[in-house]
Length: 117
Image (cartoon, rainbow, N blue to C red; front, side, top):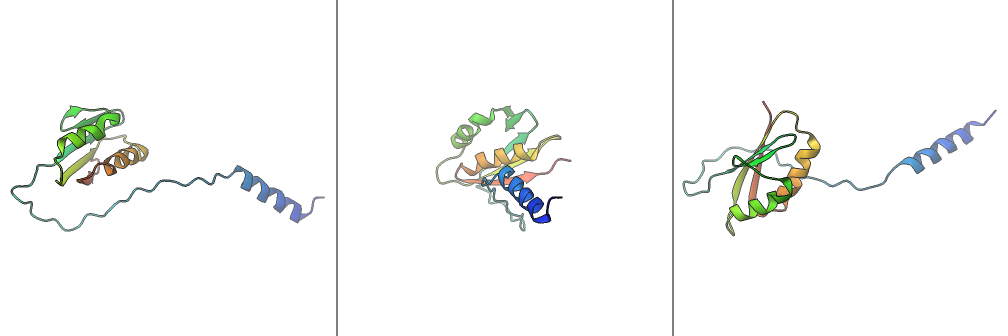
């Protein structure tokens, strides 16, 4: 009969060899605060609809690869522009995370994510 220490050693060895030690990326999320009145001269928000297979910026279909360039073109230098992200049914958390990573690379965005109804 095999001793208990040998079994523990084999289990430890198995789990050490089958585990991955990769570092996962982090996405910062900020909780919503108290609302403020919008300044009359502020820019209107951009509206981004996200579906399982579709992505639309202000009602026009856009590919996720060209989203960053489209956003950079619509934001003037040194301006802060709000972006409202609306999720449709069936959107996975991975798709939302991929989108938030792209939005984080564009300077001057304030992102608000709406839940699906």
